[in-house]
Amino acid sequence: MRSPFWKTYVALAVCAGLLYVYYRQAQSAGSGDAREKVLTFDRSLAREILLEPADGPAVRLVKQADVWRLSQPDVPAGASEVDNLLSSFENLQVDEVVSETAPSSLAPYGLDPPRTRLSVWLEGSEHPLRVHLGDKTPDGSALYAQRAGQPQLLLVPGHQEGSFDKRPFDLRDRDLLHVKRDAVQNVAIETPGASYTLVRGEKNTWSFAQPLKTRAGRWAVDSLLGTLENLRMERVAVEDAEDLAPFGLQQPAYSVVLELSDGSRRRLEIGNSPEDARYHAREASSDLVAVIAGTVVSDLDKGMGNLRARRLVDASTFDVIAFETEYGGARYVYESTTTKADDGFEVDTWKRTVPDEQERETSKIEDALFKLGGLEVLEFIDAPGDATAYGFDPPALALTLRLKDDKPPISVTVGRRNAQAYARRDGDDAVLRLDGPKVSEALASVRALSAVAAADDDAPAQETDKPAQPQG
Image (cartoon, rainbow, N blue to C red; front, side, top):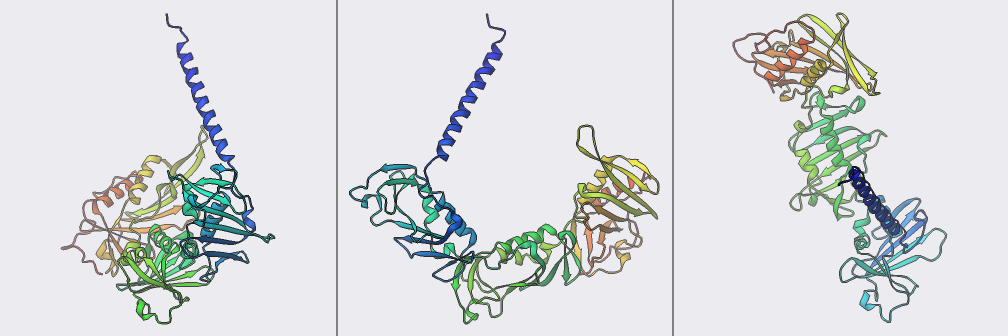
């Protein structure tokens, strides 16, 4: 007869098995952490590094006033590249001691001569710490190694080989512009097809200042700035160019001028293409001409349109703390209040405060905001005609959103003309053509909040004989 406690016994057995597995894993991890390091030193005291590969030029790095430089060529080293190199050196561990005494010959292990010599000089020490690396083991999992001046033959992890297989270019500072995107205040761009200027506003909002005043998409601009921040040279065309014409840089095809918060500027100039998807480029204050990947050129070729704000209101529903609407000669204001529920979670509740105070169903408010936030621009009309041509006099809806974290409010006007829908952002030169049916849905949701029967939004607000003819 089966015991009534058989399920309990099974559960206990499973728990015991899991505990055993956990114990073995912890034991294994602990033993891994306890592996001996090839060298023990404080990396903050490193002042010089020398890599001497048997099949290439030696690479010497010297620390000067907390800044690392290459010796040949005499150029700044990349901070992260040097940091990674030191980290690899410091954390190099012994996988196995093959022999406590020196073999009769080191040649079979690739250590006579060594494939790579690694040396690091420390502050206050006259002699360097040195490690010699040899061939890989037959299975490729480890490298033969030896501490300089010590007889032991060691094995170190094979994957570390790439950490020390460096050439001077690998360790130099390849950053072309030395700029952080958060420091950029203005961007002036010139391409073969267009010229335009972007200006940072409050709370990281972006707008075009030239050739017209209009909203830019925050994330689109951030993506471009990210490309510029991470721009690295793939190789050096010439360290000190006396003539820029051969590189197409005497009259650059592309230029990007970045004005920074500290008042300084960076000017990226891009010239001709030495090969497919590669371009000559330089920072205008430097005579170095580099070869860069074509990613930034591809981004610039997309033009101003790629950077424009394509959503009518660029704000999440959950960022809105209040909004007001005007239509049909009446004004309505809705405000949210955040409270803590019994379970400790915060909840938002909405009420109408103008023209009178009434509770409103949160889901209906959020539905209206969601539909407004989902309206996307189908066409930018940069040289618009009279406001009546787009149904703005009077508008079908005037909307102002107030946002969290003191972000600037968003105000837009929506018009209808011959079943076409248009909008204009406050302070924006452009008129935006929107999707008519989606605008009708959004207007119906907004009007329903006032508890007044909505008009037929699919009918044109003003009838004329023909549709408005957008300009530009």
